Amino acid sequence: MTTKMTIRRYATCCGRPMDITFATLADWTGFCAQHNPVNVEADKAYFAKIEAAKFAPYRWVITTDHLEAADHDYDATGKQGPSNANPELTADPQQFQMFDDDGELYYSGILYGLADGFEPLDDFGTPNAGCTIIKINGEVL
Image (cartoon, rainbow, N blue to C red):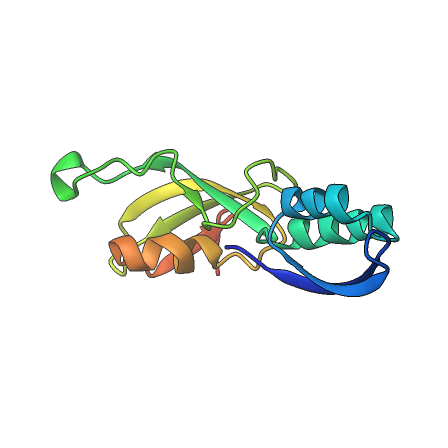
């Protein structure tokens, strides 16, 4: 996911306000090197907050794929999500298990961060395997 930002800053190189559009901190740093805008450090701090906000507030990891190889084409062990998850997020770990509607265990894993518990099911279990039930720390949600 790429978030482009436009801000208006006074650039000392040309003595006029400029609308600046950038997608990464590197883009912004490159602009600063050429145009020397006022409040560079404050803008860098603001952009760093925006960059951090691009990550989902949670991350899940499949630690065990319980399905037999004959049932599907690949082993989901190690699969992580969502696509915009922060790979370094390890706060508030919770164990989860996902089941189909017959109660067969498909996947086990760990959910990190701020989550209501349904995220692994919504992001992966249901669309990829038809899972309908999730347990967090042994309790059905």
